[in-house]
Length: 329
Ligand code: PBG
Image 1 (spheres, rainbow, N blue to C red):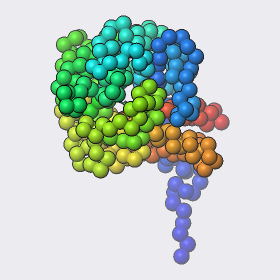
Image 2: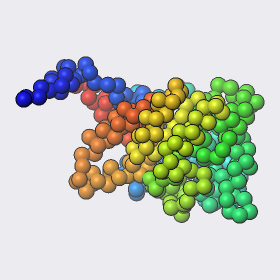
Image 3: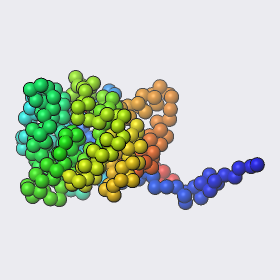
C-alpha cells in the first residue's frame, strides 16, 4: 500500500496555506544588558554576539531592532560591583543606572515597549534575588516590599512593563497595589510565573556580572524542574494576584509547562529562551555539529507552537533579520 503525502507535505503552495502561526518579528523580545559609562561594548564569552552596551549603543541597537519590526526590549542593568551590598541598597536610588537608562530610552524611543526586570540580584553582593535573613535564607516579605518600591521607581522612569523575575510569594499583588497607589495604573506586570531553578542561567550570571554566583543555588524560591503541577498552580496564583501576562522560564526544556498553561489561562503567555539555551546552540554550531540558523528557528518555532505569544530570546536580532530577508525574496 502506498502512503500518500499529507496535504502539508504535498507542495510548497499548499504547505504555505496550512502553515500554523509561527515566527514573526513582533513576537520576539530582545533582552539587553546595559552598563554605565561610555565604554566600548563588552563581549560575553559564553554568549557569542551578545554584549553589554552603554546607553548610546543601546539606543542604536534598539533603533536597529525597531527597524526589523521588534517592538519590545527586556532590559537588565549591569551594576558596578562598587555599588553592590548585601541589601541591594542601590536599587532604591532614583539616580541609579536603571532609572537613568529608562528615562533616556523612553525619551529617545517612545514607541518601543520597555520591559524592566524587577529583582534584587543585580544589586546584591551575594547574587540572590532578595534580602537574606539571619539564617542566610531569603526573607520573602521584606524582599517583596523592596521589589514593590523598585517596580514603582522603574515604572515612573518609563518602563511600560515591569517583570518580577524573583519568584517571591505574593509579589505580583504587592507590585500591583504599589503601582496603582503611585498612579502607575497603566504599567503592566509580566510575571515570571513559572521560573525553574535551572542550570541554564549560568551564562546570564556572567552577563550581569554576578559570575561568582554562576552556580548559585536558588532552589528555595525557584521551582523544582520536576514539578509540573506545582508550576501550573503557582503560575495561576499570579493571575489571581493581577498579572497581565505570564512567563515560563527557561523555555526549551519546559514546553510542556507552556502548553499546560496555554490550556488554563486566557492571559498572554511569554517564554524566556535563556542564556544557556542560546549558549548551547552556539557551542554546537561552533563545533560544526549543527546548523545555527535552522536550529535557532526551529527552537523558536517550537516555543511558539507550545503556546507562547512572545519570546524573550538573545536570537531576537538574528531571527528577525532572517525573517526580513526571507520576506524580501
Ligand atoms: C534573576 C534572573 C536570571 C535570569 C533573568 N533574571 C537568573 C537567575 O535566576 O539567577 C536568567 C536569564 C538567562 O539565563 O538568560 N533575576
